[in-house]
Length: 114
Length: 475
Image (cartoon, rainbow over all chains, first blue to last red; front, side, top):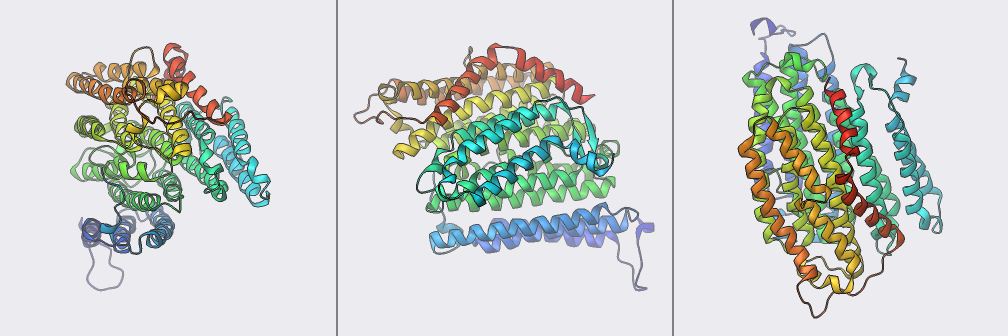
């Protein structure tokens, strides 16, 4: 993929794969956090990591592979906006949980068991 | 097309939006006295919208391919409309003292969710698809957490929103790699560029895993029982019918239209998932005491059957899928209608509480029995025909072992559905649920569901109509 390397600053070129590796690490860090964190807020932060890694992917793919069309960048913008909505609603629900249970630890929020 | 005729082309979305805005204005302007008429007004407006939606509308695309309309999508939207209408008829919980201050929000948010599903079904681009999906899933989380006095409701809302955000994150990651490998996000352009290379298959697996969360197939089902149990019953029925039906149909459309080149890969994924969903959900359903939890596991196993319609990859499979959703709507909403009535008046939600229901409430137990028979697939009722067609569609493509496992599971499911019937009709109880009075809305909804269960199977016109459209869609 040598011809795809874009050098804009005059410094050493950054290949596309570098961006993809960063986003991949972020994505799996987010998944790891989602499964291991015990606090609702920290789980939300993990989800944000996942969504931000998607944004990096879209922006990098668009810039390197398809620079003539803006589809990926617009998709990233929409993802940012919608994930902000999602987080706002999630925070509201977490506040509701806090009022009911007194804390936001996952282990305490277990009203239902089979 | 200029932009105005583009908007007019999205006729069903625009008319639903008008209904939503009218309800919003009514919510703001009606005083305490006006709010008493909120339920009939919402029902009438939605009924008008449903009837307008039945007018013929030619297939085509708008906004440069972003929005597509096919007659099949129109059929599915009608099915979702009918389901929402029945759910509104059963929404008496929001008339009670405890919840009446949230009446406006309930109808408004439910209809916004419906609008999201409309966009999801009619999308021709992954952007509109994602917007529709989020527009549907964010309000559902708030609906699940709506009962603010209840701890369980708060827990259900938290679980749903975290699950929804996580699954859409995974789905988006898949979409981003699909974009990277094909360079387009239009459903129409993508199939030619998908060539089953490793990166694309990985992207596809991420994408479809996100979708399976929404449909709640095993092993992506862990949120389902808790959310179904904790959410207000009315919201649970919405989740189990409208949300599931729309998501399955959208998944089927994508698999048929976008991923038709990698049919072998997705068939093998679905093959495994169908077997474990149907079997595991059945085994867990047997153990449940809470009837909402019980129906949650039953709906997971039903989702397995629904996906069985897609696996063949044929237009006939699509027909059977939509027909199954149509029948499942009536059977499931009949059960939820009875549960809502009993829960609102007595607060009882466990299966042992239903013992001796026949002696005090013969009509309610009769409707419940029909619904259980239909869900289990006993012959004269609609549920039998829908299962039969689903099996036929899979057999046609040579999935004999899969269909055999599904048939064996039907017998297991019959066992636990009949446990409920046995509790109502045979078991003795010292203190059965007292005789309950139902209001006319609930009565209408139950009569409608009963008619659906009895007639949709026997009269072939429904199946023929759906079949007519499904062949038009694939070509």
